[in-house]
Picture 1 (cartoon, rainbow, N blue to C red):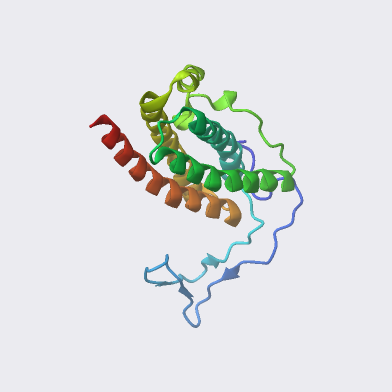
Picture 2: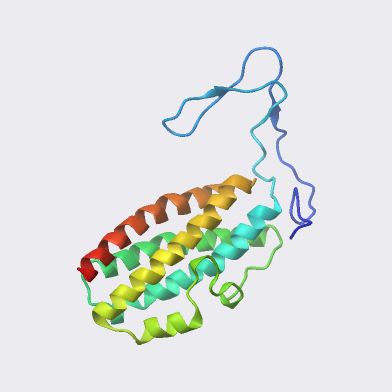
Length: 204
């Protein structure tokens, strides 16, 4: 992956040319939602084409798909094992968010001529991924024991996803993958807070 830059797949399609700020009238660059804008520096390239794809974007998708896949497997264990309460609703929200994200990243990789990674063995234990032993213990647990283990594993799992997503926001260049990364940061940050609250209630 170290040699990948620019367009992935060698199509040479760059899309619309980016705007370059000149020395004439100032160009105002909008800030983040709710934030202030700024004036572009002369010579600054604005509006990078959506088709511009880097190695960081591909690495993000190829790593996040197996990561999401394991989260969906963990969430699928909840209905038959959880003691109930708010855990089943949490699992449903995780599935509702990460299923479409995984599908979007898979479609994006396919459009770039890249294979969609299968399974998750090659990233086991990385970025908060549960190990095989941890998954087996989760499958064997029931009731409150399951709920505690599920929350601990999923909090670590989400924290790993945030690490990957923040890295994509910093280093990625593809607009679509950066949007996915921002969605991961927004949604999973909120869910970590909720899960910590649920775990505290269970342990009290």
